Amino acid sequence: VVPGRCPAVDERMLYEQQRPNHQKYAGTWYEIALTNNPYQLIKKCVRNEYTYDGSKFNVRSTGSDATGNAMTRNGQVLPNPFGEPHLSVDYEASWMAPYVILDTDYENFSCIYS
Image (cartoon, rainbow, N blue to C red; front, side, top):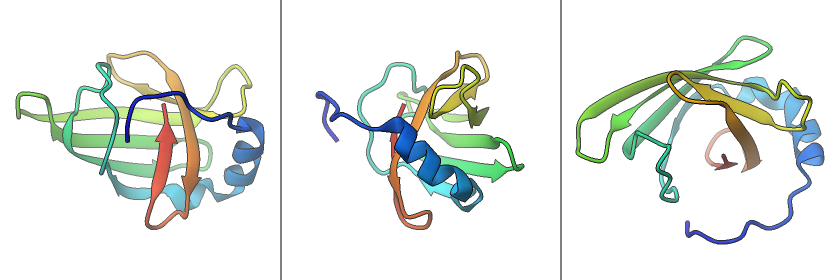
């Protein structure tokens, strides 16, 4: 993963394909690679646990901050409230941001843009 320009993505098409499968995304996901993002407080050994209630995901993220201290954050991934064709992520003590699942097989890998 490297910084750079993102390719054009048809978010509406992706969202319409993925929406019927959101329940399959529930479970535990580990972050293997990510770009440097000052807004992402958990930097190392990131584990995200998603539970799906039929309309949104509740997320519990654990790992270490940049100095190695253990950290936990809770949030939600939910349909964009403004009708845009993607999900949004909303963590406590933060603001809502786009959450676009660029690709996933729902079991082994997921590539996210947020």
